[in-house]
Each structure stands twice: as structure tokens, then as C-alpha cells.
Image (cartoon, rainbow, N blue to C red; front, side, top):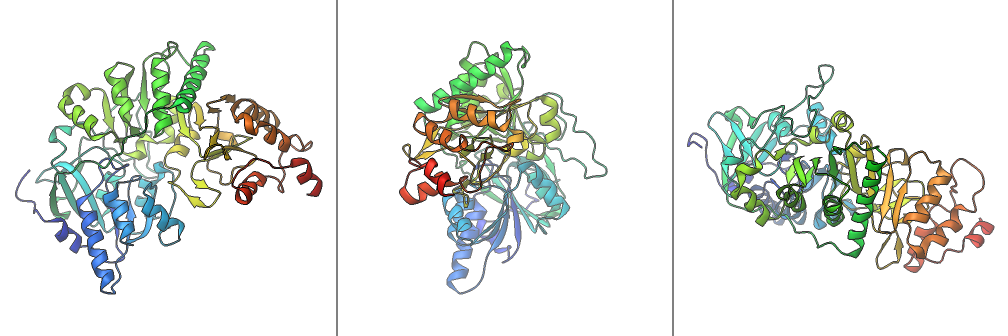
Amino acid sequence: MTNQLAFITAAEAAAFISDGETIGFSGFTPAGAAKAVPLALAERATELHARGKPFRIGVITGASTGRSLDGALAKADAIAFRTPYQSDPDLRKSINAGRTRFFDMHLSTVAQAIRYGFLGKVHWAIIEACDVTADGEIVLTSSVGVAPTICRVADRIIVELNRRHPAALRGFHDVYEPADPPHRREVPIYKPSDRIGAATIKVDPKRIIGIVETNLDDETNAFDEPNEVTCKIGDNVADFLAREMRAKRIPKCFLPVQSGVGNIANAVLGAMSSHSGIPPFEMYTEVIQDSVIELIRLGKVKFASGVSLTVSNAVLQSIYQDIESFRSKLLLRPQEIANNPEIVRRLGLISINTAIEVDIFGNINSTHVMGKQMMNGIGGSGDFTRNAYLSIFTCPSTAKGGKISTIVPFVSHLDHSEHSVSAVITENGIADLRGKSPHERARVIVDNCAHPDYRDELHGYFDQVKDGQTPQTLAGAFAMHQQLLKTGSMRGVDWERFFAEA
């Protein structure tokens, strides 16, 4: 670090930014997200609004961020538009109220959408780093996201130099941007541990307007301990994969794994690592969680390539204390590369993600409640689902104390179609959808995955439809959703009466 680059306060950095400008922030989940400058921007917006002056900005990130970014700016009513993914409750309210325009995007496409100009001009890049040099080398912290592209296209850059992360992180990042068509070539990754790019982001130091020193933890939240339902889902996934190995549809060395985020994902990874029929495996994924670090230490995960270290702060500090032993086991990439369809297909990934609801044909809703209320966004699940060797979706069979069946006649919002889904797994069982017609899919999903309280109800729906390739009716597709709106529960649809009156 050198004194040739100017140090400024977060408030001074915020003062540079004008109403209507678009900012690209570092971060992929709260890991590596800018924190001090967004908080100062929120304070500035609140002050300006109190004086009757406008201040709203466009926000582009890698994925979700922390409360200091999405949360603070949303509470200050300072976000005009947001993309590509979020998980903050205040921002979610603003989006669903129509106050913030939200573009839900596949995460693999964000960087190229920025480069192509689809998202408009990017005025500022605000990037968290653990080191920055006089000649413009930026060493990222606990994530990569779209930081390389944002740094390249933004007019000006502000660096948050976070002392909580050691400069020894240099070498944990593989920074690589593909050329744009028609000059794009193959991305030469043939195994998860392959490194193809640079250790740092390199920019013209004249574009770095200032450096804001911080000493702040990532705002990551711990996940709940596995419960009976999530453990059973995990066991079912592990049993399914072990069965695939016995059938020689998965090689003896296994295949790289992509896993979503959350309690179910942790339970699945735990079950896979303890299953006697599954050998130690590698991961090529987005989010590296606490459970992955534990499995690396146990020798169950041999290598993990991801976009972010979304781990608890205690686990992150334990990695930093033992940083050299993890240098050969962890790698962080841009999401454009981690989620790249070419690489997903080449490596033969096993993709395991979570659904909000699944219909009886295997269509997946992973983003909306009752078809209209955005939860978080599609994230990278579509990138992996469409291109994986095996694409698995998991969910509990019921929600809200049994009042909601997550298995429904037709999803209220469709994110992943039946054509991309290999298997659906709940705590009740496994529905292998490969090679099955819509009629066969409906029966195996209901019989194996639906909660026993809803099986007769779901059979009552599709058993009434005798013709057509797909046993579906426009009049009845959302009858269970309508029943929920009327009575507070999906139970009790009288299908015989319904079809008689339809």
C-alpha cells in the first residue's frame, strides 16, 4: 500500500455520487460486499430527502449483499433499480411495492450484460479489497462476483480497504473475463482446481478516486442446525446419488458438485459426506458455506471452487489463521466463470438446488410466492439446472405448518421447466423424472414426494384428466392456490365437484 493513492472518508466518497447514477458494488452474498460507503450513501439520501431533494441510484452487484448495502439503501428509499439478486427484507418490500425496479437475471449473464450496455452506463465501482497498490492492482476479499467487469467499465472507482481481511488473500482469486462475441474462445477449465486468470484486478490508478479504510466483518448470518426434515432430505439425496454410482451412471471418482445456499444445502452436503457409498468429491459452485470448510478439513471435500466464501466470521477467521493450508483447496472466481454453461456441461456437474414449489410435472418455482411476490431471485440456479449432468431440486413437502403443499398441480411462477429437472427430492422420497412422460411424472412426484395429507388431493386432480399429452386443465391448475387464499389452507379442494361445475 502506498500514500500515492488518496485516503478519504466514507462520507467524502458518498459526496462524489449524484442522483440518478448507477453504481456497481463488489459482493456476492454479504461476503466481500462494500459496507462503509453504502451506509454513507444511505445517510446522504436520508438527509437530501428531508430537504425535499431527490437522491436515488441504480445498484448492480454480483448477487445479494448485506444490511449495510441493500438494507440501508432500501430503508433510505435510495434504490431506483436493482439487479440481479437480493435477499434483504426491506429491499424485498420496496420491490414488491413497485418502488424499486428489479431485474431478475441469471447470474452468469450479469457481467456480459454490463459489458454489452444492456444495463446502461456504470458511473462508479465501489469495491472491497484487502490490498491495493500504487500501480492499480486490487486484491479482492471474500468474493469476486462481477467486480472485474465493474472495475473495467466504470468511469471511476472507490476502494474500501478492509483491514479485517489479510493481504495474504492474494492468490485465492482467479480473475478472468472472456472476450465478447465474435472473438470469444473456449474457457479452458477442465477440472475445478484449474486456474486460468490473474490473482488481482488491474486498473488505471488514475481512475481510483479514493480509498476508504475500514475494519468490518462480512454481514453473513449463521444457518439453522439441521432438523428432522432437512436431514431426511439430505439422506434421500445421498441415497439417490449412491444408487446412481451403483448403476454406473456416476463414475467411481464421482462428479463435481454444485450446491445451493441454506439449511437444506448444508444437510445435503453433510449426508453426502457421511454416506459410505459416496467418495470424497470436489465442488464447482457459487457459495462456499461453513459446511464446505468443515468437509475440507475432514478430507471429504477435496477442492472447492466458488464465487464467495459465505461463511460465519468465526469460520472465516479460522481460515485466515490457517491460510496456507487452504491455498491449495479453495479458489474464488467471477460468477461469469463459476456459472458458465460451457464449463458446467463439460465438468458434468451434479446440481442440487432448493425450490419454493414444484408442480406434478417437474416445473420449478424458486423465486415467487403465490405467483407475484418476489422472494430473492433466480440467482445461479438456472445456469446450473439447464446444463448439469444431473439436476436435482429439493424442498420440504409442506410449509406453514402443513397448510401449504409445496407439490402443486401447476407452479404459480415458473423459473425452471420440466425439461431441465432430473429429480425432485423431499423428506418423503425421490422422484426420478428421467425418461418419463408427463402422466408418469405426475404419478411418481405425487406418490414419492408429496406429503401423505395431500396425495389423495393431488391424485384427485390429475386422475380427472384423461386426454392430452399433459394431464392439465386451465380451470383447475391453480385451484389449490385459490383454496389457500379462501381458507388459509390448500387442503379440501372437492375435485369431483370442481370438474362437474367447470
